Image 1: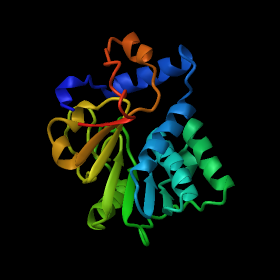
Image 2 (image 1 turned 90 degrees about the horizontal axis):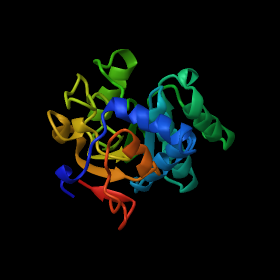
Image 3 (image 1 turned 90 degrees about the vertical axis):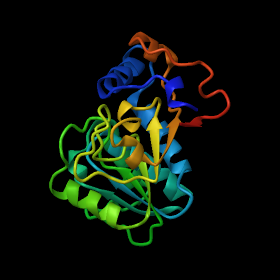
Image 4 (image 1 turned 60 degrees about the vertical axis):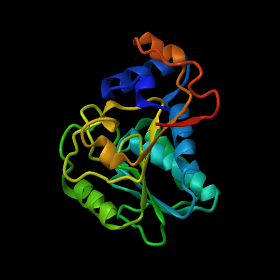
Length: 226
């Protein structure tokens, strides 16, 4: 589908839509996170290492990891600082731990053919530092297939500017609607194939912030390639 045929969501609008979905339409953040994880996991065709940061993007990755574990495709789960997770993301972590999956605080890519990048989501507005930068560099050096959750970590979701370092993805699963940064600036070069995945956000929530979404967007399938 042509990118011009779809509206886009800025980082601010993502937060507004998530809040509206829960508060006005009864669709919890946990439900959206679970749907996001399911969609991401379906793109992983082989042994996958899920690499998580500390926000809701990490929660999407942890949900994906639980499905991958059930399907026998989980090589490792790595979380930058699990103690900083809160809300829905913390509950995804708890669910993963309860089924006996080890979550490493160190980056582990051994045994994986695919890396799921769930380090940063749409809220990044500065250069990755410290271990975040180290993990992104290691992912890029691994020569493994990389699937980014929503946007490649290190890419500004609004401007398309790539901070240094930035994940170089083979595939990006953007959630609900495309983010502007995927389609301009450094976005097209770093995002790889971009797929828009339905995670159950009511069209009425988009309409409430003035974003008109074609009702037939996911009529033929729950993912659409840009």
